[in-house]
Length: 131
Image (cartoon, rainbow, N blue to C red; front, side):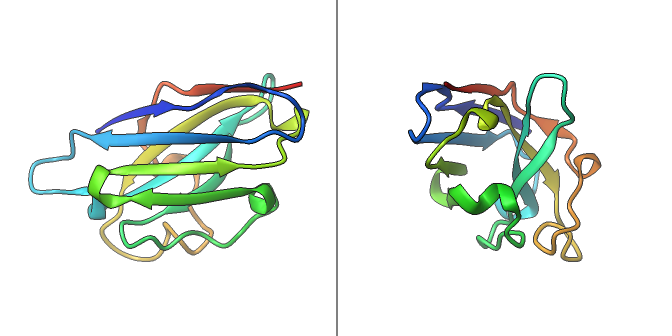
């Protein structure tokens, strides 16, 4: 699976950005609905942290504090997910990564238990800097 992110950049505090991630190269016989997609971020000298997940039907994980100002939506026709970020603050500065993992059973994608190890496929990341 190939994941291509875009939309990062430098903004002033209070500004907004929309990140996009387009997925391709699914396993033969599989399609977007068979994968859980996610956004993570990693600030300098910090661990990579999960922002949000979404399955093929559009079901997302329960909101966490990071999502107070972030919204995850998808366009299945384009195999693309978007992370809309508003009222950005300097602490949001990080590399933002899109990730994918096969999701064929259970509810891990949207029940709040998704973890780093569930996602073997990663994009190259897009930098967000807030000053």
